Length: 350
Image (tube, rainbow, N blue to C red; front, side, top):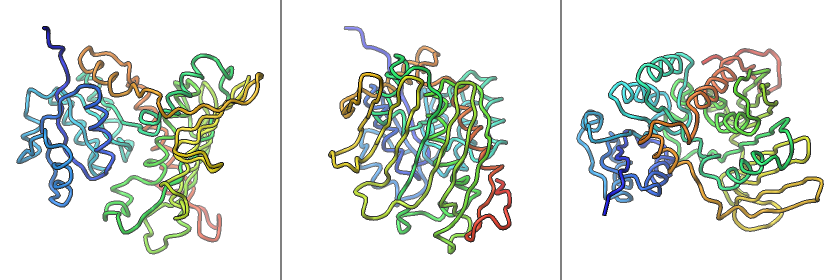
């Protein structure tokens, strides 16, 4: 019996709970979780209990220096992710990070240079596409030409703020990057993917803090308008999900084509259907509802394949960097809305 090769991976940085999903998607793909390091005892206990197969390393260098590892995963503090990824690539390993993968254009520029020099993989786990069966199904329908040529996407990313659970870095813009850099990177990724855009620009963007003046560096609202060589996109994100909603956010995307449109209600259907992953398709034949709960999620298996075979089936590297670039540029040039409106407007900056 011939044993099939697999990917051995480690983890450095577990500050966001998305790390659990990142590890699990690799495990589902047959990868081996070897070791992890985190400096926060309060985070380590639950993580070690959840993944007892992994050894807790004494230092980050112990993980980085392990030549048996193919890949390092992180969901560390956002501002620390790119420096780690750059170091990982320089050590000859591939890298997968939670979003945002960068908090400044300078980080992105350095990562692009190191990635081109080393040929390693720098992947951002855009979980609102990769880990949402409805989004995967929508991609299949768009690729099949079901709604004709895609003209526009409208992506909405509301989130519940849940203030008591948030660490200090959540409220510091230098550490989390801003709402468009952070949350909206999901919607930028989907805009590029569904429109097939390989080049794009930020037409306009704006951010504001309307609800939480006690946290002046927290942006609780943001939107942007994008123009790409495959279509246009509008994105709106916020931290306003009310407690009455039974999930953390009513994330949606509408994909407009020349022959129909698709709407995804990813996490909840306000019309009353249970669960998430609801897809609505409208075309010349009529209206169709598709329950996508059992659609397979290919990202993990594709990423493992890419690591082993040096391919780009999970996500083209250029796409990963372009999605980050647009989110960063939108954040950098955003007009900062005042609590009273637009008087006076100011650029937000990074």
